[in-house]
Length: 75
Image (cartoon, rainbow, N blue to C red; front, side):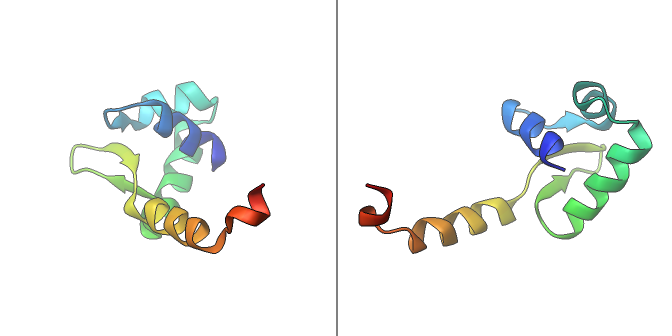
């Protein structure tokens, strides 16, 4: 799952399944299965033409983390 998120994060434009599978070394059916699960939870978004991009849920999770970290803890 993290490999797919890392590859998606490297691309500005949405990425087709075949390219994601190639760049991660995953079999396309494995990549599709993982992407489907991540899409259901909002971690990635799939467009009608079958390309993928990072989902809004990642922003929501990042915002939660940011709100819970105090400057003293990070210093």
